[in-house]
Amino acid sequence: MTDIKVRFAPSPTGYMHIGNTRTAVFNWLLAKKLGGKFMLRIDDTDVLRSKKEYEDALRDVLQWMGFNWDEEARQSARLDRYNEVVEKLKSQGRVYACYETAEELEVMRKRLMSRGLPPIYDRSALRLTAEQIAAYEAEGRKPHYRFKLVEGEISWNDMIRGECRYDAAKLADPVIIRADGSYLYHLPSVIDDVDFGITHIIRGEDHVTNTALQIQMFLTIGGKLPEFGHLPLLTGAEGKLSKRLGSLGVRELREEGVEALAISSFLAKLGTSEAIEPFYDLESLAASLDFGKLGRSQPKFSVEELQTFNTHYVRSLPFAMVKDRINVDEDFWNTLRGNLNKVSDVADWQDICCQKLKPVIEDADLTSRAASILPPEPWDENTYSAWVSELKSVSGKSGKNLFHPLRMALTAAPQGPELKVLLPLLGRQKVYDRLLGKEA
Ligand code: GLU
Image 1 (cartoon, rainbow, N blue to C red):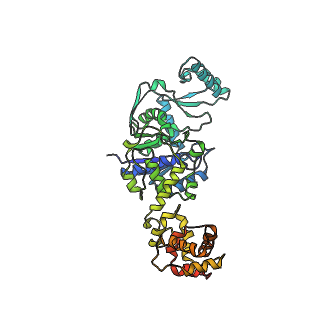
Image 2 (image 1 turned 30 degrees about the horizontal axis):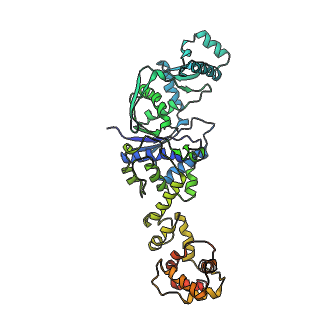
Image 3 (image 1 turned 120 degrees about the horizontal axis):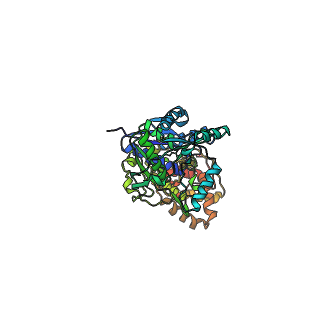
């Protein structure tokens, strides 16, 4: 049996967004589920657009999500290897030089289209004579290179889309090296997948045609194929995933308090026949992975839904999962979590409940009366409403005139956690002292 190895291959030309995060989620979970290895490959052949800052941010997000990797590679460090393979392919007649300029190619393309033909490169470069090539070179033209497809059917059994078939005659020989000598995505990706022994490739369905082209490269270079799975792309509420949503940064979501496992749980089930529900560890999420449950239609992604799911997630988090991040005990957490929107909100409550506070007394008459009618403990979530309704009748005050002075005395701030939840957490003594203006 071959060793399973899955990879995530981002281009460091932008920050991690919801689309490539989803690809990372599926690849990582698959590696985990199959007990294989996970590799991080940095696709940085585009030197102008690739930036260290983006790469650092990608790594940061992967680590935060818990997607540790067993191995990594960087394409810009492997150019010698790519050149070596290209030389071999040239000698086999599978890579050939072309001298057309971009404008000439555009004219050819338009001519074909106007005749109702698909814009497939006609391989005229293969018919150039030595003199013509010499003339181009003398003119200073630099060749770009194409990979020559062989005729026949290209097929694979996609983990998500099922049987896929392409007729090679209907595909254009892909350009693999630009006239400036830089590599396009196709060939380096295949060379890496072969050299590193990648067994499964999960990526967006925008890569389906690339897969057809790459299959011939795989067969030529490596002799065998990995498994492929193409994920239906996410869409926004109005159809295509808008630029704003598509580029929605995971860093921003994290700053807003969205939990890493909420993102993984959400993305792994979006567009499947299963309900989106909280998973509290990646292992069980991985165990639940089933590509057969992914639909073929493009799932709608909405940040609001993710945020709502996250709130639900935060409110259900077991203490063990947050205890290293917060400074309260289990009882406090359990009482409180149902009121939080993000885990870090717990700090507001903690300051109010566990630290000494100088109360702000706005209406001494009201707050001392409130103190005098405090019910005895034990207190629960109903204590507040019974107490307040009695205060209403004895003081004749209501609305803001009632609630604002209470809040200012108990929390010293005009806004904050719900008082009915706060009361039992504070306890009778603290509430009593604060209502009387004592630091407590
Ligand atoms: N760097 C490519 C991308 O981000 C990788 C695609 C692939 O998975 O092969 O689209």
